[in-house]
Length: 527
Ligand code: GAP
Image 1: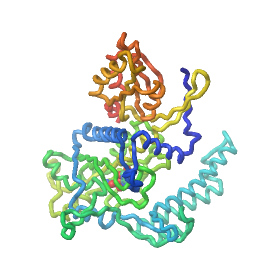
Image 2: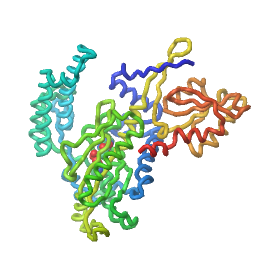
Image 3: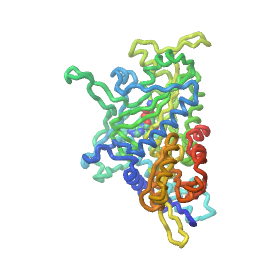
Image 4: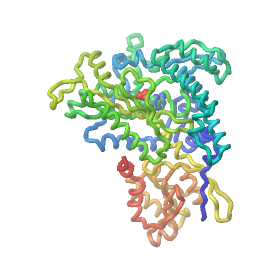
């Protein structure tokens, strides 16, 4: 069959694409709205049978890249509940706030900083529109740099952006809530629901969920659901260092749930109220932190790029405003369907956290450096990645609609999830061509051998073409078809998800072929 492939991304706007992706995730068992039969719970999601597999594979890729490949990094699994003083010491009780604002007409609540960022995006969009228009007008002779440096409308809008950015940064820096409101008024931000500018004052809102520990509610103590996994690592710094006889520099990695009562909880699994983080705190000598900060920035970027989602889809973004604990911070951003947004944070957290825990607990958080012959509180460089956001990068990049030209000139369509093979939930589908003549038995025999190493799926229902489409839709990188020749020659055809090409191979070769194509090792070797 002659195939012609058209990626249809270009004629589908990103919003439509995103809606289709969400519907596809549900239809094929990747992601469901939490408590859907009760109309769902806002910004909380459940991972279905395939989503759970993909998540597990992402975790394995991250964990192995940290713990398996670094002799000086170990992993832990700390509890979600922690002593309430932890969050006082870390600064979360006093400072883990978002500035919120309500629209008096729609009664909708927004993050003031997000409204301002969106207003800034709108001005950027105006510039981009001018550039696109000019590019069309001038064709090949168009010089973008010269155009943006000389066009008056572009210059005026750029000046607006610069002024807005300066004011916005100052307001955040000085915690000036009145000016945040004033910026919203000055830039004529309207509520997307009511369309009015009838705003309340800006107030601070703490993002931690509070609950009670203990059986009798009057006696019970208030505790928090952890808003980051990092503190579980800090409070165990000495336990791990001593029990593991760890020498600086060394790291502690952890994967686990975190909870934030996000005001703006939108964009599917991008911003959730319950989510998972993959964090690593790297403890270093004071003074060495900038070297390690740069080292981990590069390492983490390489980890992302090894997935093959397109190098141009990633960029670094240095923080405008440093958190109270950091002396350097950068985000790795990814081009999601709704624009470039934060995927991972790399932060040089100084000795802030360990010092705070030392002060609040009264226990020494020091390390004895035998080379320097002195005690000190180590500095920390952290890498903090959202598991759900990583999941979304993979799914958003994977979702492809293709038109395939058949031999008779007509077109067939398929939706295919081009998930990196090493992370795909199902690695191999085994499909008997017909449900008789001993072909199902042969297929089962192949699965019984391969299932110890690879997640395999058996499917005998419907035509072979429909079965291929089902496997394409869930992202299975390889399908093996058993036909009558298979019984005579012990060979099968193996079909590649992305190229749709088929090849006849012997059954004995299957393990080696799959190991080569879907192994996590290949991915790890690229980092
Ligand atoms: N320990 C540092 C820390 O928690 P952060 O920038 O607040 O830093 C780190 O969070 C990462 O966690 C983010 O880059 C993002 O990938 C993920 N993340 C944060 N809030 C999230 C949310 N509400 N939903 C999904 N992922 C989130």
